[in-house]
Image 1 (cartoon, rainbow over the protein chains, first blue to last red):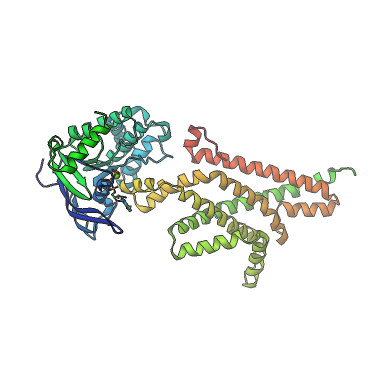
Image 2 (tube, rainbow over the protein chains, first blue to last red):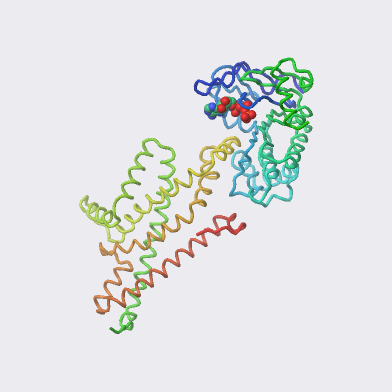
Length: 249
Length: 225
Ligand SMILES: Nc1ncnc2c1ncn2[C@@H]1O[C@H](COP(=O)(O)OP(=O)(O)OP(=O)(O)O)[C@@H](O)[C@H]1O
Ligand SMILES: [Mg+2]
């Protein structure tokens, strides 16, 4: 593990119109680390994540990802996107392609990987997410959890240096959630650098090297998973008890 | 009244010739019109000056009768000094006509693509051209394929009006036969039957094309044309 962060946000400001969504957000993620963003709905978690992949432009501050300075006018957007994989709550698989074609499309089109090699990689990543037997299926023939794992495989096939996940289990029922979370935990164990947004507090506690609690567009508390047991701010205390109440514990 | 088809049937080589020309006209206009229409749909989606021009084209065609478009093309080109055969003018005007309808249909198909899929393409590092090719166009076409196929069959039927500028297609052939045999009713019954046959041929062709183009529909046994 190197000490220079692979993802770094410094004093990031972002508004949509007059609505300030990120108000001085700073955090850094080292290679191989898992950072988990938590916070109430509307606190700016998704926006922060989208800024890291330059799906949103920031108004001020600085973001560096895998050596790409996102404010650089000469930023190679497609090079950034090759280093960063992102998976959303809505899987967004391409419906007219089989699972395998979904996975091989970008390596073949973007990296010019020969078909045979792309298919070998596809078999490999599909096996990693437990979908080896679904290569020939079309997305609509899969369950939600399987579709989400296929979307993860599609991202992995590009061999990104960093993976971002935005509430990838929110649309799934508990059983399917568990199988997707298992894949994420294996991925983290394999050393992938990850930033994820989740409402699964138990999972966050297990997987996080760094917990980032956001509130009103600001990082209100940040630290190892232990901060959940000993909140320093009233906002995090309220958030934790609220989440526990909703988890029915 | 008594029917007598024999003298009409005797003219079968004329009918065959006309039917083949109608089919040729339709295939040319379908292929060229699809290319033009798709290009326009992309321009419409992108907006800008080119999109504006395409919008004017689409509206102009969709709000004027085909026959008027054919006359404009026929006499317009002649007055500009282009003396083209009736068949070429017929192909051109049918292409221009169906291109506008295709643009409208394809635009609807493109717009129905969920924004999340385009974003997924961008996040995978696909270029704009690659996104159009792999994420937008084929699914859009699949989505509107039944409408497209109907439009092209309609075009084949509408090509009948090009007989007005003496293009030698099927209706023109029938006109000639009825004046030679004095059997208009029989002639036009046969003509109608031939158009039905041509429609069936085109629909079969489109179904076969869908079979090749859209493997998903084949696998999931979805309806095509
Ligand atoms: N494209 C946009 N245009 C305008 N406002 C936006 C846009 N995206 C997000 N917002 C607003 O920014 C605020 C933060 O949104 P964001 O999606 O980052 O929150 P979040 O923490 O991910 O919430 P949730 O847990 O509900 O997903 C919200 O008030 C939201 O309405
Ligand atoms: Mg969100």
